[in-house]
Amino acid sequence: GQNIDQPTEMTATEGAIVQINCTYQTSGFNGLFWYQQHAGEAPTFLSYNVLDGLEEKGRFSSFLSRSKGYSYLLLKELQMKDSASYLCAPLTGFQKLVFGTGTRLLVSP
Amino acid sequence: GAGVSQSPRYKVAKRGQDVALRCDPISGHVSLFWYQQALGQGPEFLTYFQNEAQLDKSGLPSDRFFAERPEGSVSTLKIQRTQQEDSAVYLCASSPPGSSGNTIYFGEGSWLTVV
Image (cartoon, rainbow over all chains, first blue to last red; front, top):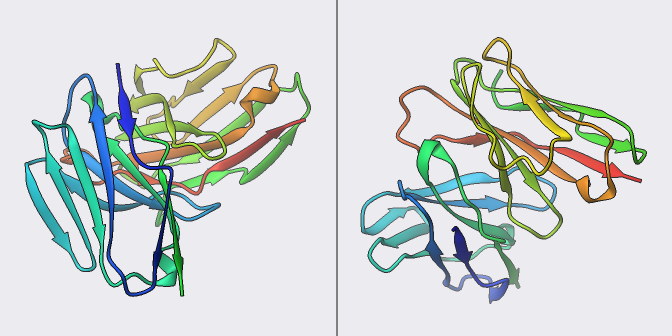
């Protein structure tokens, strides 16, 4: 079966660093995506990890450990516009993304 | 077009009505996906096309749901005899041929409310 686990909600202040964790169990694995989704909008691509380790892209970094079924998204220098839901999504066969329920991040001044 | 385009953006249907949701993928994209997203939840996979072939429809929740992509470009998701539990956002996504998996683009979604 497929199981994705991430915190439901997190809060942080502007300028801070926040880490959103995700654990997963899937039948088949071809990498893991993180998407950002603002309310009422489409998910937008943030990162893709296929090998173990850290991928850094500006203020956002994503880490993957395939043996542990674990990933995290690290957001630095938080801005108000980073308030959104963050979706962890392992990629199984045939480019099939399996999403968690998402983590709603609220950034306060 | 520049991105994945979906229509209608918003649809209110009476229970029992049939609805059709359209997706125009990015030009040249071979793979097309439909996802259903209920309020406060992550998207859930419905079905996947490669060109006109429907390779996976394991996520379609019932036989009231039907998807097609007859010419390998535009796709339609049809829901027959809509029920209140069908109320959700229906997201379409596409990706180009030969992609490594990191190029899946989502449309804005079609918001369906069944009353």
